[in-house]
Structures are given as structure tokens and as C-alpha cells.
Length: 140
Image (cartoon, rainbow, N blue to C red; front, side):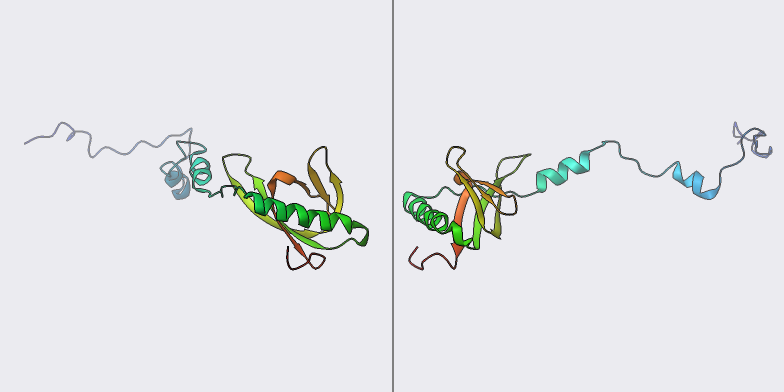
């Protein structure tokens, strides 16, 4: 049985005079995988990233928090160090995360409903979750 390539199978392999043959590494690189869907891995990572839901405080918790803030503001001349837990909304998707920071309250803005800490952190009052510190009485 004859094959249609029998007459050319033993001919010498063509080598280009214009283009040198590829080295082993370059030849293998032609067949390496590529990112057909640019940004796909970023999207998958972003989707998998967990966020927390903001906890809505009940009226009692809001009242206690308001009392704690009042005590801190009344003693602001003493620059008490407090630990504040607050919610930071996520910029890319729903939810966010709770952050704990320590510092002194520099300014309270009733109009914008924010407090400014001495390190420059600005916190919305609606995002406050808890305030603690030595200045606060145990019953709060």
C-alpha cells in the first residue's frame, strides 16, 4: 500500500535562510497558555471577596452610643484615648467591613454628622458601632 506522502518523506527539511531557527525556549513559548479572558481572574477574586453587612443598632444601643460620645466630647479638653469601632462601606459592592481604631477625638461636626480623630480619620455618626475607653464609666 502506498501513502501519498511516500515521495516526500525522505526529502531534507527546509531551513529558512532569512529567519534563524527558534531556540528551545522560544519554540516552547509559542504554545504556552495565554489569558484569553483578560481581567477574568480579577473578577473572580472580587466576587469571592467577603464583605460584612452593616448591623443596625436598636434604640437602646443607639442611646448608649450617644451617651458614650457625649462623655468623650465633654472631656475632649483632656484628650482621652478611645477605641472606636465603625463600619466602612465597600466601594465596589454591597456591604463593607468593621474597623477598630484608637485615638483622640479632634472635632465633632453636628452639621455633617461626623467626628474627626487626631490622626485624620473621619467617621460618619451613622457608621459608629461602639466607643470604649478609660474615660467612659463601666455602666455605659
